[in-house]
Image (cartoon, rainbow, N blue to C red; front, side):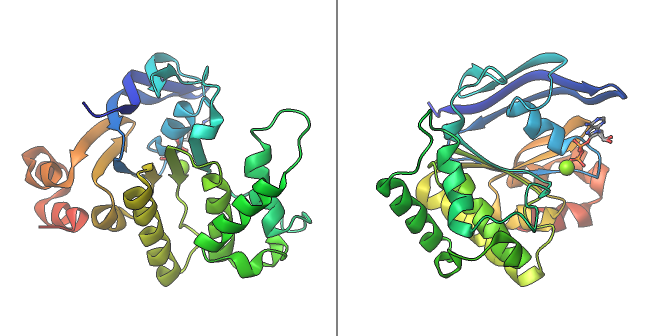
Length: 250
Ligand code: ADP
Ligand code: MG
């Protein structure tokens, strides 16, 4: 039986302004690559933040690796690239290597120091993502695409089982975006990392992900692209033309 990575049952989330997620029940299995799509403000970021325990759950349940979200203590098993890159203050004097090293440090107890082995781990991750030559550069000196790769390296340096990416390509030009998507697909396929990718680029999801989760406060669809494409409900919702454009396969 496939291993459950994420499971939500009737999950609801609210802010002071009211409910933004209603009755979300999904199960994500090990090795899945789930594209999370939906209009602006449909609750995509809230959903992944709730899974990470970064946002309160007002009703229902959510489990990560079988453990209730929020009480989850094993951060090393999840790599997260948040939507907002505010954390990357351009004048913050951190180099690429230091930034990726922070991913390892975040899991250590006192004394919080990188070992020689850690430095090698950082180096090989930089190499794998093609940014080793930027190792000593300051983060603020890099292009948007290079910064995204460095942040991805930081999210991957602990060898997570689950990778959560929230609109990672918003600031990238089309060519860099395509390369980034291929890289994620590669990580999913070759390393067996389960991926949740939030994006409003529904075409890219159809090309790369194995399942689609369509959100609009409620769960409108969750399943394979084949199911999506054959679903009369989805034809009624999107129109057959858009349905095929989103699916990208048939
Ligand atoms: P998406 O990522 O799909 O664009 P979000 O999850 O960011 O959607 O937001 C869902 C809804 O919740 C939106 O209406 C948004 O305005 C609201 N919202 C998001 N974050 C907060 C917050 N911290 N406080 C109050 N409302 C919020
Ligand atoms: Mg968002």
